[in-house]
Length: 242
Image (tube, rainbow, N blue to C red; front, side):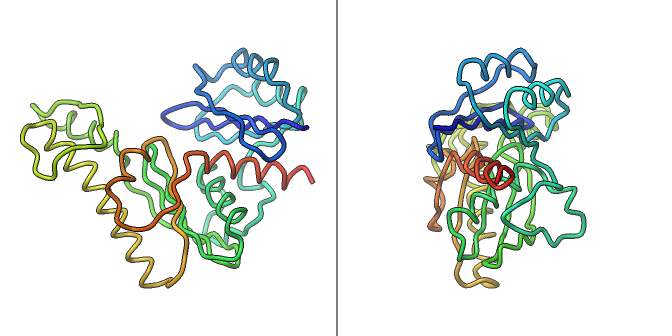
């Protein structure tokens, strides 16, 4: 059975996942973006295919190594995709956003889909039932909001996020938790409601490292999948290896 190594180099974390056939096997966090780290992963898992989604400046040697050892594809605006991108500048679309909408098309090909990524930023990504990625919106993510209040004030601390907190905060920490996490949850629900006015029937897919903090606070029905980007990367790898 063929194995596929999916690499996701994000602004906050460097991650990898392994597929055996079309089955997700495991995910892990990479310590750094060096060729030695990628060599270790390839030697351990022996993938026959690999795909890289990167929004950072990474060493070119990584791509050269993956080309030599696997059937490699780098996700970008020139990739063959199971969708079209009729936007003004398709070359500016983040690789992570392309992976999310590719997964949505692969999982729900006959429906409208709103894929929401909760990472360094919140990205809202809408793809219609004609497989046209129409765009969406971007707003600050959870850590960015916590950090901005810490850095732009004299006394507010930098805190660690928690999923459970009171609506009415009783100290500085719980006030910050309620303001940021509940505020973001209401934002997400509000965006979903706005899409409902324009598109009566669509799926909502939620993913990203911060997802567990928000699922308990959302009122809309969502399809939460922490591996959505990896599934999109796998689908794109298959599409480009036909």
